[in-house]
Image 1 (cartoon, rainbow, N blue to C red):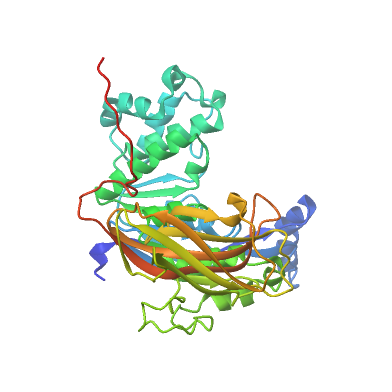
Image 2 (cartoon, rainbow, N blue to C red):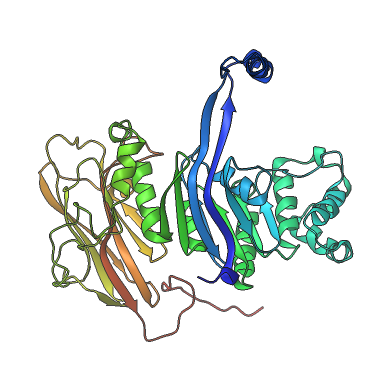
Length: 444
C-alpha cells in the first residue's frame, strides 16, 4: 500500500494510566520517589498500571470507512482520542494525513461560557478552517443543528441533545478529510439520527475517511466496509465488517456461564475463521437443493448448539430454493430437536432475513405470534408469506430462544447464514420491500 494512500497509520500503540487508591498515594508518588533516588535508595510505586491500549497497529486508507467495535472499556475512546491528538500515547506512534473533525463526546472542545456561534468559530479555528468561510456557512450550521435562537445562547444552557446537534453540525461543515465519530449518534431523536446518517453517507461519497464507533452493530454494518475489534485494549480482529461483527455479537450474546470463563478463552474462540470453525454443520455445500444448513455460516453460537437440524427458504411445495421470484409464496422451514433439559414454557423459534450487510429486514418469532410449540422432542415450524424482497442477495438466520424475559433473549442456538439465497424480479423496484399496496385516487 502506497504511503500516499494512507489516511491514518497506527503503529505499536499503547496507553498506560496510573491508577491511585487515594489522593494521598498520588501525593506520595509525586514526592517520595524523587527523595529516595536522591538518597540512593530504590523508589517505590504508589499506583497500579492500567493499560487502556496494548500494542495496537493498523492502517486506514483514504476514503475508507472503518468501524471500531468492542465492549465498554475495550479502549475504543482512548484510541480515537490519541488519533485526534487530545491524549498522548505511552508507546507507539500515530500519523494522520488530512483535516480531522471529531465527535468524541458531548460538548468536547466547547467552552460552555461561549455561545454556540462563538464555539462554531472557535472549533473551526482550532481545525485550521478559514474563519471567513465558516462565517459564510453559519446559516447552514444553524439549519442543520436546528438550534434556532439558541445559537446565540451560552452552551451551558444547552441540553445534551442540543450539544450533540451543534457538535455534529460543526464537524460536517468544516470539509473534513477524516471524520471520527464516537457514539455521537446515541443522543438525539430518531429523526435527527437518520438525518446524521444520511449526511455521513454523503461525506463518504465525497471520499472522506471515516472512523465510526457505535454499540449499534447494525449501524456499523450499514456504514462500514471494515471493522476493527478491540477487547481489553488489544486488537482482536481487523477485516471485513460482516464476519467480524458477527463474531463480536456471538461473544456479546454468549450465555453468562460461558462469559464467566473469562476474556482470554472467549477471544481465542472468536479468532477462528468460519472455514476453521469446528461448529460448521456437516451438510454439503455441493447439494444446495437439500433442506439442511449451509456449511459456512457467518456466525454460529448458543448454549445448545445442534438443536437446529435444518433451516431453509422454500417454495410453496416445501422445496429449498436458492433463487426466488418476487411475489411468489414462500416458506421458511426450521427443523429442531429440543432435548428434555430445555424447558418448553418460554421456548421460541425465530427467523430473520438479512441483507449481506447484516441488517435485519424481516424478523418473526413464535413467541411474538403466540404460536403453540409441541412437547415432543423433534418438530418442524413453517413460516409462510409472500416474497416481497426486491432483486438482491440475502441470508437466513434461524434461532431457538428462551423468551422468559421480554427485553432480552437467551439463545440456545443462533445460526446466522443458514441459507444464502437471491430474490429476483422482472421489474425495477426501489427500496428493499415491494409489497402489494392498494392505491386509490379521489378527485378533489
